[in-house]
Each structure stands twice: as C-alpha cells, then as structure tokens.
Amino acid sequence: MAFRTPGSTFTLAAAAQSNLVDLSFTEDGDPIDVTDLAATVKEYETGIKDVELVVTVNGVSSIAIGDTGAATITWNNGGTSTITTSVCTGRNVSGNGISGATTTELTFKPQPA
Image (cartoon, rainbow, N blue to C red):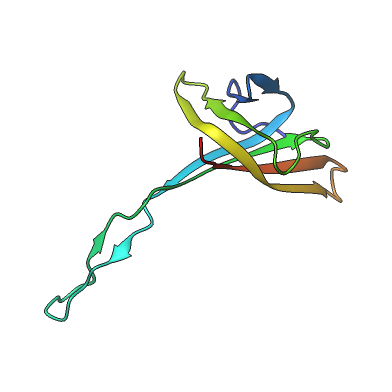
C-alpha cells in the first residue's frame, strides 16, 4: 500500500512508528441542539470537543490497547497534531486478499492527565 501523505511521521511516547500507510486526526465539536420552538431552522452550540487520532501501519504493530503516551502526527507541511496524554483505544489487524498486505489500524483518544 502506498503512503497517502509521504513525509509525514507518527510518534507515540517519543518512539517513531515506521511503515505508515494512513493518518488522520479528527476534532469534533459534538454539537448540542439548542433549537427552541420559535426557530425556523435547527440551531446548535459547540459541545465538548471529541478528539481522535487514527494511524494505519503496514504489518502487525506492537502497540496494544491501553498503551499510553503523547501521540503526535508531524505532517509533511511541518504542522503537527497531538494528543498530549493519549491511550490506545482500538487495534484492528487485517489482511488484504488482493495485495496480501497485513495492516494494523490504531486509534488513540485523550485520557486524564
């Protein structure tokens, strides 16, 4: 599989991960519906931010659910996306029947400091 963002890197607890396939960093404002009866359209306010970092690597990663540390993507344009205190909340190992490649998708969420 080709890496979609060449030059970008991922580190967990200052340990660089290799064989990257895909990276994503999502911030969702978790909108709260505050529409009242007089409104003509639905109205929202921003709720508590929900942050998630997902990385896919070639092969079977040694990172396990429960592993912690600062999870950082350094994008190929020099910008960064970080969860300062993160925990691995998901791990999905899968194989591609066409290419024969095995990949591991890892999901990280914030945890209390």
